[in-house]
Image 1 (cartoon, rainbow, N blue to C red):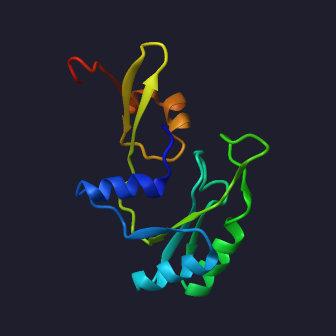
Image 2 (cartoon, rainbow, N blue to C red):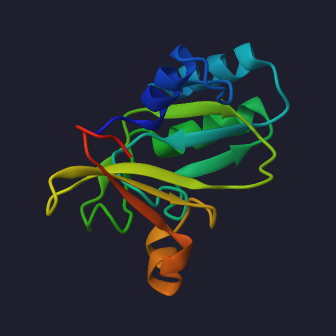
Length: 155
């Protein structure tokens, strides 16, 4: 199942899990309206595509003014974002997530995948951060925890 970051955060919010204030926008005008509604001093404008590596590919941009929010949204929406996961053709950006800028004290990785070999859900976690988890796994595999979940038993 592929869901966008904004959809994941809406789901988390519905279960009371705290997430930064933010909303999705299909246009630069909508992005500015969202930023205005939040009324904060800084924002992050994030391309919503199904691929990792958005930040390194320019798909995550900081903005300190409404003009910058507009410019970042205009640059992203309608563009093709090319990451290591998209291949040369990239993925079309049709929407952005405009989110309140956060001070990050620590970053973790947590993911659930379906392991095709075991045909089970596998929980993957690391305290070594969320970006470049593949490199962390290759360089220091002991920093990545993998647990197979048996649906009949649990963890």
